[in-house]
Each structure stands twice: as structure tokens, then as C-alpha cells.
Image (cartoon, rainbow, N blue to C red; front, side, top):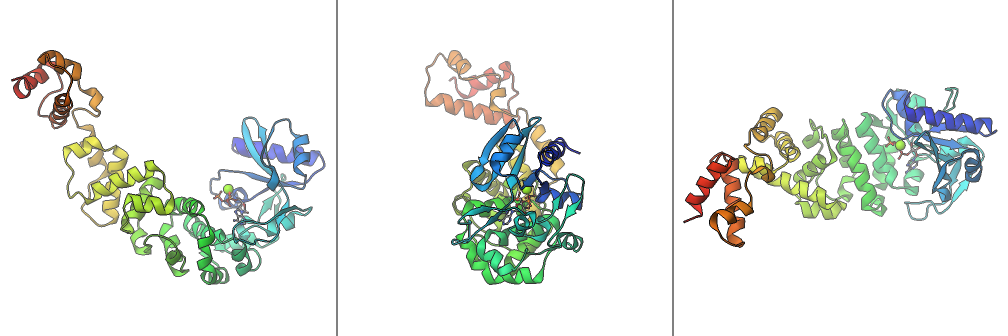
Length: 385
Ligand code: ATP
Ligand code: MG
């Protein structure tokens, strides 16, 4: 078991010893039953936040108004949340109020899908009030309770269903899917940041084409910016979210500025998209392209070319071409502006920048070896007359 699982187990047993009930909940329980690796481990308890803080020495109030306390054990942070239920949702996004409850069953009832409404005790017993295990067995994503009501409460759940389908390769249960189709236009109530966060996960998922297919079939795609076509994602595996957003931008025929604005992408992401788009559009890459662009950008652009059925190279060929450059960075030039000024006995000026740029290109292209003698010779020929 991982260090985090050990820490979470410790937290649960400590709470039990203090007379409370505490269980593992959420994605970690689901993923462990599926034999998948999991990241965050959540603990739920009938202890109130102030009780949780009394049981442990080190805690941080991360979301005390929602009943969540972060307990620190061995440098691990475990989120402990008091059993709660959510009252009315007037905006389709956030509950108006949070109520603490005594029973685990009530806490699990507010959770989105049956596979996410499982709990596990310290002794390993699984608590399964909503048939989550049967649905896991059938590889089925099913809303807890009445699907339409659950999507009316929180429209993000529609995207979560699709994102989980893309990650797990599961089917969305027909009644649940039908409710998504009925409520698709409600997705516009959700902030772009939360949509982006779900897309970050869906785009890099192993079954991304399934996710895109569901987006189209549910008509959610029609409510969202960009072009969605499952066929375009059929054999696509994105190693990073940056590559995925670049591919999505290209599939959508949107430039970096437009996609960045639509999904609030960072400047760094927009820059990456711009570079990939340039390289995908270029029919062949010049030596200077290999020099200017990071290997990650070059590989991403090559992957996109493959997925778009454009002529592409192998990853190895690209790595080799990059490696084979005489220098990798301009700092590797053995001379700088000081040398030029000294050799010419001249002062700084626009000529200097131009001379350095020309030298850099000549060295990268292998026209001038990167050593003082050869550069001096090149310089007196080109600039010192
Ligand atoms: P992962 O972390 O692998 O993406 P997860 O299932 O752990 O998946 P989280 O977003 O970490 O998802 O949420 C933890 C748990 O909280 C979920 O398993 C689910 O029980 C509940 N949950 C999260 N978001 C919602 C929501 N929008 N509506 C209802 N329940 C939710
Ligand atoms: Mg989680």
C-alpha cells in the first residue's frame, strides 16, 4: 500500500478509536476495486469538523464550511469530510447550503454516480447502498437516484459522466444518458474553468474518442466551443494536456487566441498551441525550426500531423535531427557581442544584433564551425570590411 493509503488508514482507525465512524470514499475506493492506480484519498466521517480537529494534532482548515479538514500524517495530507447532504440548488452549480448528517448512506446519496458512491471501512468491508459494485462489474456509469434531478442540481455532472467514460472505457447507462440529452443546454451555467478541467482529463484519457462520441450524441458538443468529431480522435493518445489542446484547436479550426479565450487557457498553453500550429502547417521543417522549437513542441506537431494523416516522421528521426544540430542553444556560441566589438573596434548598435543573428544561423546550419578561429574568419569576411 502507498504512503498515502497508510496515512488514510491511520486517520480512519484513529477516528474509530475515538468512537466515531470513518470510511474511505470516492475515487480511491472505485479505482482500487478496478485495480487502477489512484491519486487523492478521501475520508468521510460522522465526526464534526471540530471533533476531527480535536482527534489530530496537525490539521488545516481547507474547507471547513463544507465540512472538510485536512489532516496531516507523516507529511501526507488526508482530506476528512463530515457526512453531509446538500440542500437546494437554485443555480444548477452549487448547493445553497450544506447540512451535516449522521448517516453515511445520506452522504453517499448526494454523490454523482453509483461507482463514486462506494465506501470502504478500515477492515476492508465495502459499503454499497446504491449498487455501485454491480455497475462497476457491468462497466456502467449510472446516476445515483433520479438522473434528471441530479443533472438539474449540478450540470457539471453531465460532463463528469462523459469524462469518466473516456477514462474508464465505460458505457453511460441509457436512462442516465437520456437525462444528459434532455439537460444538455444547462451546461452553459457551468464556468469555463470547470469545463476546461474536465476536458483536461478527457482529452488525455485512453478512450477519448468514446468521450467525444458521447459529447456529440448528447448534444452537449453543440453547447460548447470548438468542433467535436469522434473519428478525429479514434487513434489519438495525448501524452500531455498541452498536446491535446493543440490538437483540439486544430480540429476546431481555431487559432491559439480564440481557443485560449474560449477555454481560459494560460499564456504558456497558448504559446505552445501557436508553435504547434505553425509547425503542423509547415510542409517541411527547416534546420532553424529544429533549433528554435523545443523537442516537446516538435514531437507534438509531428503527432498532430500523424493524427491528421499528413506526412510525418518517426519520433526517433525528430530526436536525432534535434540532437545533430551543431549547437542546441544560442548561449553555446563561443563568441558574443564583446568579441565582435573588439574585433571591429566599434560601438554597440543595431548592426551587432544583426551580426549575431547571422552568425547563429550560419553555425546552426553548419556553415561556420563553432570555434574562435573560424568565426573570426567569417566575421572579417562578412562584417569587417
Ligand atoms: P478522480 O479524482 O479520479 O477524477 P473522483 O471520483 O475521485 O475521480 P473527485 O472530483 O475527486 O472525483 O470527487 C471525489 C468524490 O466526490 C467523487 O467520487 C464523488 O463521490 C463526489 N463528487 C465529486 N464531484 C461531484 C459532483 N459534481 N456531484 C456529486 N458528487 C461529486
Ligand atoms: Mg478524486
